[in-house]
Length: 84
Image (tube, rainbow, N blue to C red; front, side):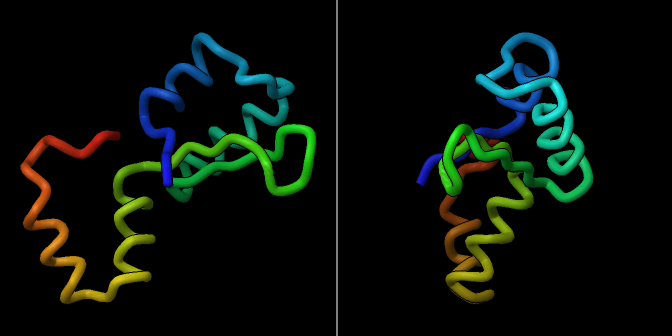
């Protein structure tokens, strides 16, 4: 799995359109700011671009692996080393 994070959100707002119409970019960024995750299809359903915050992405991991394994995963990531 790959994610686009804070840098992509910044670039989407200031530099790159990522092939999206202005209204679609605005919707992705609004959702990202309010929920930590934004997505828009690019031409076909289910294929598109997303941006996610570190908190949102880690929250999804926690949902999948459960609280105990999540604590072990968080402890294994050196501080400041998340790729977002």
